[in-house]
Image (cartoon, rainbow, N blue to C red):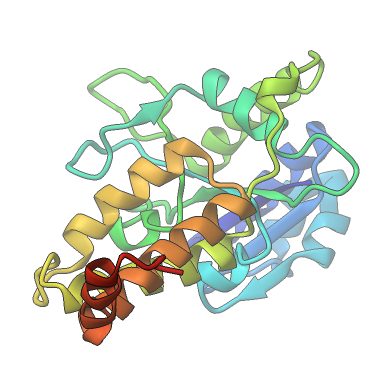
Length: 253
């Protein structure tokens, strides 16, 4: 139930090596976003006995479509920056990934890896609730794509062998529901002047990090969606109704 998503991968040999790493750790769901060859000689020779994973790999034009049914999306980064502060080690993040997919009727979780030359962009990261960084020597901090995948999947494989407490198991809302929530949040906060129209993503990315760490369940999404819907109603004339009811001492609802 853990999906490996390669975003704009460059080398087909790396894609084959990723498939092999997935086979080594018992994973089968490979998704490519924005390119990448799975049928080249290089990809198939590097995959060895994991060619079935290459054959079943799916493609999507956008990250949002690739993870729309997922309950948790974890991105990987070796760079530091304003939106990359809350990073975890693979060992720590692996427990959360395993917890997210335990049970019979839970949604899949996705692990995102960026292109070999510069990794996931800030725009890519907005779909991630959590971030992983792999410690490495400062002289050469960037790992080969397939190596990075193997390190992360190895920790996930180990984490899957231990039992999880009830508190660690939550049923997260699907990504598409969370994205619809953020669409509403963005629209509402633009109307009330909280977001800068020229750069609304600056604050939105910070909000994504806060809510991503919280681990939103479907009930949470419904409550927050209702909250921002009410704010929007209030700013569009609902305040007059609210004041009238308050003056009369009648219930708001």
